[in-house]
Length: 541
Image (cartoon, rainbow, N blue to C red; front, side, top):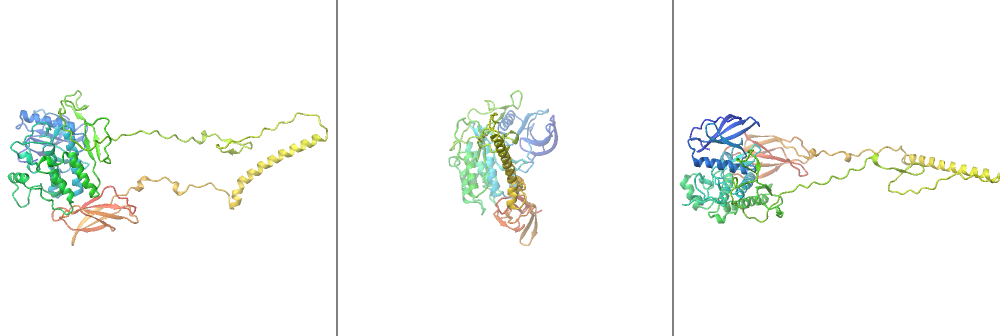
């Protein structure tokens, strides 16, 4: 936002405490407030009283409705509520994004290729979601992409957005990022116009300037419009930019809309292809879609596109801010539905039955033989019939004593067998080994594993100091192990190479940046290939 005029006084809003001025524009001021309940900092956009008209109020209301319908998307600024202050000024209460917006950042130094691709995919997903809800943004540019506390881009300023089936007007366009059709005698906008602005935004992050802004030459409105309409897209001039990325941007910013990507989704997937080519982490595409049938087939895109249902807030519902589906008052009747190869589906969560727990020792049945010794449960034991005393018979006196002596010897023999079996079972292993039998001890492998031990810690204290030949960076390995090495990426070299370099010692010297800070990203890698989740950045003071 520009600061060509003095801002209006902040309005008195019940439940909010004024903190500071965030910025001033042609039609609104943005203030920082602290909400009392729930306690948090919020950005409040307030329409100017001297610029208010029936049209501006309608546009402001439309912006509130559009952002309320789309703000559940992770790459769109969240709107909390809307209303009219006591002095009659309409206002929007939005998510406060404290980090510098992308315009502030690219003017300091160009973005790395990895971050430019990531931001491009995430913002393209937000634009695709808006298109599927029937909304054109019409003012995509780095200044309208804020950065949340979690370092995610958040698209904002839907103030001049329109429905895709409405006639487009050129009011409020930003010339450096606008497509050629915006400057025609009868200006027009369509989804591919937003694709052009997306490509121009990614180009700006990489180049550190708008696409047709030529250093050392006049860059007024007339010159920019002439170049946008007639000149081919200049090359980025960075040695680390692959030819494939230059071609993706050239197609997105083609002069004729028919030559561009047919949708923001197609543009996002083209950026993903470049990420794969460069072996970068592939950024998922979050799509907000309410048009998907229930029986669509799975899209085989390796989970790189996530689809969510549209959730909108209808200010006219009672109670307000209810979670509803889009209605005739919150969404246009004709929604733009771009075509693509296969419709993605939502990932289902399947609840599985937990395996039955094994029975405890108290629940097991132990069988014993006739001698009282336990036997295996898997075995079948056949017991001999019990001996019973024979009924008294009249026998001769010589035979009776012999039978009694025989039975006595049988009983003594059985008892002896039991005693021998017990002695042998207890002492035989000790006799054979020469030592008494001991209880088995748990081995080292039976100890429980600590899952946190496999996490590679991040390096700390990345500090740079000027030396002869550049800047020397040093850092600390919190848990050094044999085979550790480090991957270094210089992120602010004057030639913008951003190439990675492995080193074994915790230090490196890189060329100093001609302007601004010199920064490097350091990643600790173990000998087994595991590495810290996110690199640690260090910059010169």
